[in-house]
Image 1: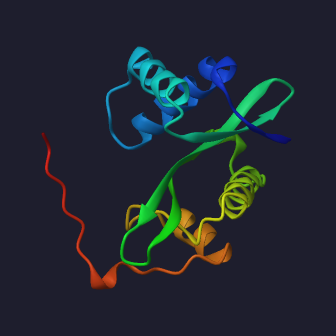
Image 2 (image 1 turned 90 degrees about the horizontal axis):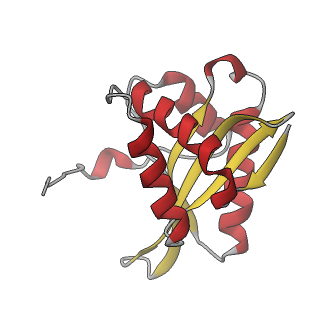
Length: 147
């Protein structure tokens, strides 16, 4: 398995996985929407995507959003998406992607990486804690305003 820093030439591979990721989170399957969203992120340099591949097959991806923390006055990286194809799970793909994300964040001088996950995602929580992430959400509530 190889972890690569993806670019627009990997669009179809990422879009397929991204569509599966959205379906996993109970969204309607829409491969064209997935392709458009990923293409925009890559073309506008708005995210960083790492792709796990083996024998030209995409096994998983992670998408990062560089950002800032005003309170700490520092650069951070938000690990927003992490998805591994169902038949590639428990084979080290997620760990490889998370290691690549961490190396990227450290290389940019980010002070921390943030992520969120569903409270029912016990395998994900186990992985994050194994990677050294600490749950920090008890002090804040998350709100959204849909526009």
